[in-house]
Structures are given as structure tokens and as C-alpha cells.
Image 1 (cartoon, rainbow over the protein chains, first blue to last red):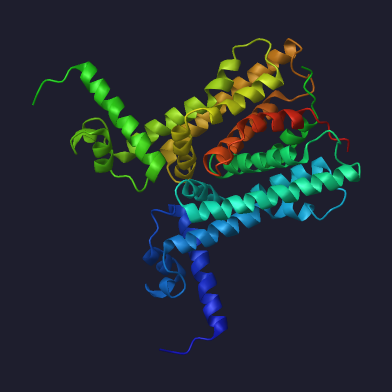
Image 2 (cartoon, chains in turn purple, yellow):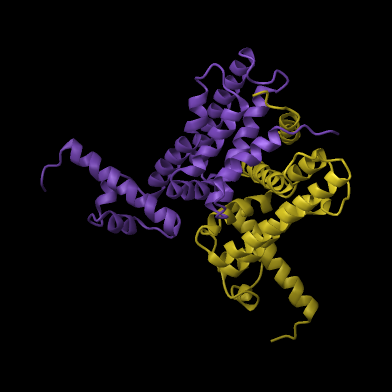
Length: 196
Length: 196
């Protein structure tokens, strides 16, 4: 066996994850086997097993990556002292402008949450973390008078996350492509006060 | 072979669909086989094949049922001449009060939309139909002055659907159970006008 440097190992691992993402996005988690991933990566059939115990481990890694990517824009806003609702909505919409391959993995990962306890614990902890960060941003915005005082920050944060998920689904699974429209939709609705 | 009456056939078929729903909700589409469904239904191993060509056909049937159930409350409102935004929000939240088994099937069906063209065509047609109905309800509400005139009905309808999907996901996959809170969240946010 040739000696493998740490850099080489890291590159191989990244290559396997990238190949798995392509397979999962195209064929689904369940129709993809470890040998499929090896072939897609252009590596030997046993190569993925040198980095991952099995497909589930790769799914968990990619689901985590999808989750972090989806919520990164709203999380970034949490460090702003004077966030506005309009900025939060833009950040919630940003994931659908991004990597469709990763979004397709995310939609499949939601199905996995139903019966994969480890993945669900990860996802729930991540969800709570992001919700708290968004709520903190809304509170900071209220102090800076850029967010309406009457908005409950925790409730507002959860609605932001529901909209983010809802539009990711419309885009990735239903194929709706009018992304500029998504953002206007929400702005319009948030700008509207129910008269009843 | 004993003679089977049409009523008996219908009852058997319904029993198989109900068994498949339980299996899919518990174990997922991919971990469920046709013999699993037969066993769950308490029928002979070949029984499901007398009604369905294969598992995909049962998935399509249950996905359609989940879709119709999820959107039935908002669709019903489309026949009201003076719907309010608050009523639409309540209707969008109603699915999460319902059958969790069916919601778990719905979340998995989203993953199937990615690569199952027939299912996606069905789902897209259904999505467009419901969106049109909700938009029509919003237009009627505008004529009755129960919906704000400045709301774009088509955009508003799509946001209602994003919220519905987003909260179904939070409930069915992430396990968030504060359903009364969901509704208040949205009402609060819709009642808020961004000051910027």
C-alpha cells in the first residue's frame, strides 16, 4: 500500500462526500449504495469505507452540511444589532438561490428525521439554536427600534424558519423557480395588517 | 378461489392502503416491502398485488391522499365570499392538528417528488390548483373588504402554502408540538408592519 498523506486523506474524503451528494441529489439516499458512491468518486469500491462506517454516516454529514448552509444567512444576521424584518426575510429566502444539489439532499433528510433518532436529535438541536439566534436578533432589533416592539421574538423566529423551509420545498421539490417573487411574496404579506 | 364481491374487494383494498400508511409512517417508503404491507394488513402475501402493480402505485395513492387532506381546509375556504386572513391562517395550520401518520407520509413524499416525475406532475398540478383557489378566495375577500386591498392574491396564496408546508415539517419531522403557538406566531407576524 502506498503511504497516504493527511492532505491526500482529506482530499479523498471530500471527494467521496461530493460524490455522495451528487448521487443522493440525483437518485435519492435509498437508491444509492456505497459502491455507487465509490464509482461516482472515481475511487476503488472499498474507498468510502476507509472514511465512513456506512452510508448512514455520510447521510448524517451531508444533512448537517445542508442544515448549516440553509440557516447560515439568518444566523449571520444574528450578529447585527439593528436587523430589520426585511433583512431577515431576504436571509430566509437566500438558501433557494444557492446549491440545488444540497437542497435536494435537505428535502430527503427531512424524511430521514422521521425514524433516524440520532439525525433528529442533531436537527432539533440545530433548529433550536438557530431559532434562538434569530429571536436574539429580533430582540436586538427591537432595542435598536428597527423591529416592531409588538412582535414576539420567539414566535417571529419560528415563522421565519417555517417560511424558509416552505420555500425550500416549493423550490427544490415542486420546482418553482420564481425566487425574486418568493421574496416579494413575503414582504407583501408582512407589510399587510389583517383588518379583522 | 372464493367469489369476491365488489364490497369485499373495496374493503380489502382499503385495508391494504391503511396498512401501507402505517408501514410507511413507521418504517419509511424504502424500508417497506409489498410482503410487509400484506403482513401488516393481515392478508396473504400476494394480496396487495391484486390491487396494485407495485409499491410505487400505493405511494402515489397515499401521497395524493396526504396532499388532499393537507390542503382541504384552505380549499374549503375558497367557497367563502368573505374570507379573512385570520381564517386562512387557521386553515393553513389545521393539517398539523390532524393525522400524524398521514403527515409523516407527506414528508417522505416530498423526497419522492425529486425523482418521480409522475408524482411530481400530480403534485405540481395539485399545488397550482390549490394556489389558484386560495388566490380566488383572497380576491373574493378583497371584494367583500375582508382582505386588505394591497395584498397581491397570488403572492399571498403562495405564502399561505409555504407556511402550511413549513409548519407541517416542524411538526411531523422536527416534532414541535405547540400547535396553538403556531397559529399565534403567524397571526402576530401578519399583524406586524415592517417599519422600514
